[in-house]
Image 1: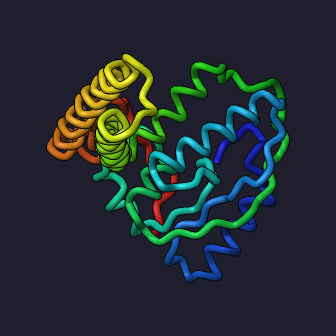
Image 2 (image 1 turned 180 degrees about the vertical axis):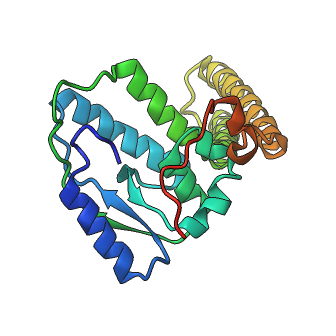
Length: 225
């Protein structure tokens, strides 16, 4: 949870109650159903949600406010995706989870220091957790576009050869344009193919292994006997 007041004490209690109801077998996330930001921010956020759903197949409905079973840590600390985005990593891990609606609280003081660039970067970090899925979806879209452009060339040839409806020079320009589109789509498809293959072989940052590079000191403040 954050300490700025937007994650409330009442919300903590609801998370704990939900966690108790499932006997500690699932991660519980606070589902945000209403945002209090400006109209411009909400408009861009809605656009981002549509883009995120289309690229990853996962709806954006949660932030970091959650309660997590300790047994799930062994999985998460070995996931390189955790370095980019905690909530997205939990969803990507396919660990059991549930969501409960919890209203966002009011910031105790001041305002958010996140500007538009920071928010875009944060959103892209969430999408990057599903990088291979995004790559495969874009690959399928590129191949589909390539095939549709090929069908368009065939239709142009049929109209030109078997009908009288073709305007002089139209078939040449249409075929040339569609051929360029086909080349672009096949180039994009090849790029995404190599991206997916590379992402499958790149181990990246592993928290349980690499955390020492960023932690100067660890102090135990409570030991359960």
